[in-house]
Length: 118
Image (spheres, helix red, strand yellow):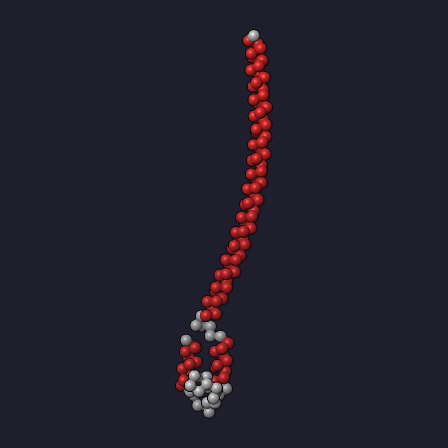
């Protein structure tokens, strides 16, 4: 009777091992799936970070350009046009704008052009 009990115990142990082997196989498949998903997410994250860095750099460039554009040192094309008109003999001040200067310097025009230049 003891031999029969021992044989039953060995067979039960074998069934437990087979069940564990099935569970272990399922666990291995799950781990492989998770590793693939992790790698895909890492790759996507790297791409998103690179794109974010590009956008941030582009925005910084635009902001720097905007600061340079509004900088008082960068007078621009409008000032150049007014200075050219003044040197061609026309008033650019608000008092006599567009009229001929008759060869004399106008303090209003010079003051206006110097304000733009500062």
